[in-house]
Amino acid sequence: MNSSKQAVQFRPFTRTEHAFQKLRVCKRCGQFTALWEEKCTSCGRDTLVPIEQYARLRTKRYFHKDLTVGIALLAASVFFGHSPQQMLLCGVVGALLLLPLILLQQRIVTYEQRRQLIRLFRGRIEQIQEGLNVNHKNAVALRQLSERVCYEMLREIAILIHNDRIRLQQVALLQSFVLRKDMELTLDPLLIKSFEPLMVRYIGEVARLHRELIKDRTFRYVVFYERRILEMAGGEDILVRVASAAIRKKRYVVTHAAFISRYVRKLPKERIQRLYHIIQENPLEPFGDLADEVKIMYLMEQYKN
Ligand SMILES: [Zn+2]
Image 1 (cartoon, rainbow, N blue to C red):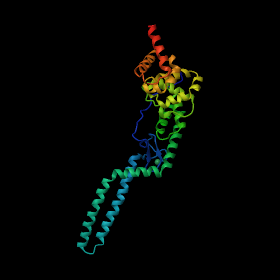
Image 2: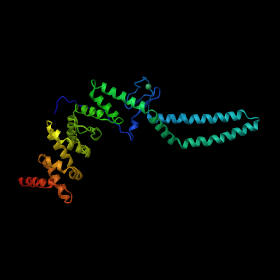
Image 3: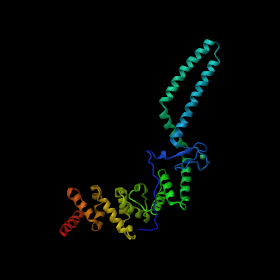
Image 4: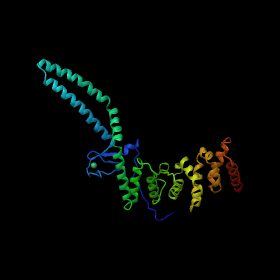
């Protein structure tokens, strides 16, 4: 293993139900951010609020405006009344009319908050993008100072920006750390389209530490670039590890039987046993040549013992 890799501990990553919940907006200057800074990087003020809270504030303001108009009309009707009886009547009728408005507002508050949120996204999409670009630039600028913080920032921004550039930047940074089993790693969201040795090495690390993260998209990536991976130093070991990861589910074995059969001779004994049992338990599935090959290897192993 490369000794220049740093041992790091990542700050915990908070998952949100929706990606947009990562966004905060400055109440003063309107700049958006997906990061955790306390003060707005544009105006320097302490006025960042989560986007949903901002939508709630706008809803409140919107309702207050309606209510103020209602109260003003009521006050005017009372003021312009010709006699005390008329004024009283206007006051009572006006108050009775205001009551349904207040009740209505209470009933539609959640709906109105959603509408405000959608309006915010539609109307200010450019500012949101601009804010995320500022975040991205700040993260990259920090790389010299701390690769760990740079990675943590990119990880947050990547929830909202989806492109191969930001994915590869994360993969490259991950390669400069000592990855451990207890780290919360991801693979599918980081997969890029093109062949990239850094990506392949990262897949190899994940296959070693968290093989449950190796799924269909990774198998397709690896099979697609198999020849080029074999040309890399240590490339074959990575392919063996990925083939090994495929043996955890029958479905993967069926789908990638041809791929597995190309590396079956290098698989650990315990994986061969598992593969043998999967094949034996599913006589109707088409495993092709893999079935015969595994059977021979399994029997040879039994014979040796
Ligand atoms: Zn600001």
